[in-house]
Image (tube, rainbow over all chains, first blue to last red):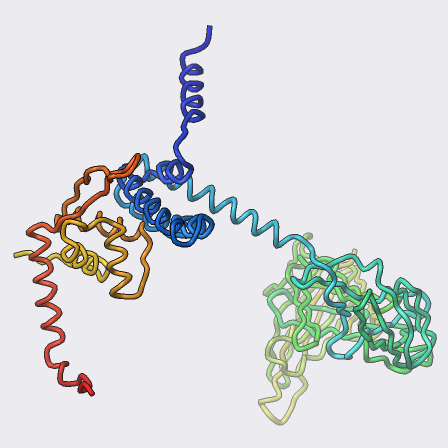
Length: 393
Length: 110
C-alpha cells in the first residue's frame, strides 16, 4: 500500500516527465511568465524564424531564433517578477539564486585551475636588491617561485639553477646554495623556455649581538631595540636576512617602523626577543614593570614595579623598601629628560652586568632607595624617569 | 485630467500600434520600430512594453483568427484605446512644449 503523499509526488514527477512542450516554452513557464505572454512571444519568434528559414536557410533561422530567445528572456523575467504572484516570485528567486550559485561556482573553479608556467620570480630583498645569504656553513634554498599567468604558484621541482658570474658559490641543480666567501654572484634559474637571473649577495655572519637586558614600563615609552651582526673578521655586516620575534607578545610587543625595531611593554613580566640571522641566534631579556605610585609597602605579588619620579635640581625622593633581593634600575619616561641619580642605602649592592645601569641588591632589613637630581644652575635641568624594582627572591 | 507618463519605448510602441491599426501585433511593432529607429528590440522587450501599455489601459489585446496555414496560430493583436489616443496627444503637446523655441536653432536645409 503506497502512502498518498508518495503517490501524489510520483504523479507530479510523471506529469513533468510527460510534458512534451518545447524547451523554450517550458523554460519560460518555469520562470513564472504568464502562458499567454509566452505563447505570443514564442509564436512571433517562430513566425519570423519561418520567414528567415525561407530566405536564408534553416541554419541561419535557427541561430536567429536562439539569439532572439536569449535576448527576450531578461525583459520577460523582469516582467514576471513585477507582475506575478508571490509563489512565482519565489520560484523565480530560487531559479536565479541557483543559476547565480552554479555560475559563481564554475567561475571560482575555473579561477582555481593552474595554467602553464609563465614567470619565474625570485624573492629578493628590496633594500639589498638581491637574495641575501648570511649562512656560513648550511646551504640555503634560493627563494624562487614559479607562477602561471593568473599568479598561481606552481611546483618549483623542475627549475634548474646554474652559476653565471661573480664570486664562486656552490649551487645544486635544485637550488641549494652555499657561499664560499663574501661578495656578489649571479645565478640563473630556468624552467623550459623561462629563465631569470638572480643576484645573490653572500654576506656570511659569524656573530650576532644585542642588548642583554631591556627594561620597560607598562604605559611608559617604547624602547628602541637594536642588534649587530659581524663577519669572521669582526667587521659589521649590514645586508641581513633573518627574523626578529617577541617570544611572549602578551608581555612585550615588537613593532617595526621605518626599518627600526621598537619594544612596548604590555603587562608586567619577563619576555624575550629572539634574533636569528643566517645560522646565528641571540636573545634579549625584556623586563616589563607595572607602574605604581610608591615603592613602599609592596604586596608579595608585586614583583616588577616602577614609580614615576620628577625632581627639580637639588631635590631628592626616597622610598623605604622591604628586605629582599632586588634588581633596581632607573628608566626613561615620555619626557626624555635626563634621569635622576640612583642610590641604595643600607643594602648590599653590586652593579648588575653587563652595562651597570642597574644594581643587584640584597638586604636583610628595610633599606632606602633614593632618587636625586644634582643641583644645577638652570631650573630647566629637572630630572625625571622611573625607578624600577624587580624582586628576585 | 490625469497624465499618463510614458517611457521612450512605451511611446514608440504606442505610436506603432496607432500606425499599424488592425495589424498591430508584437512582430509587426518590432519591425515598425526597427524601420524607423534602426534599433531591433527583442520580442520579449516589445511584448513586455505592450503588456505595460495594456496594464495602463492605453491598449487592449485580443486573439486574431488562426492564420490561414496548416496548424496556423492566432496572433495577439493590440488596439489603441481612447485613453491611448489621449495619451498620444498629450505626449505630442508635451514634446511640442519642451521643443518650443528650439526650432530656430535647427540648421537650415541646404
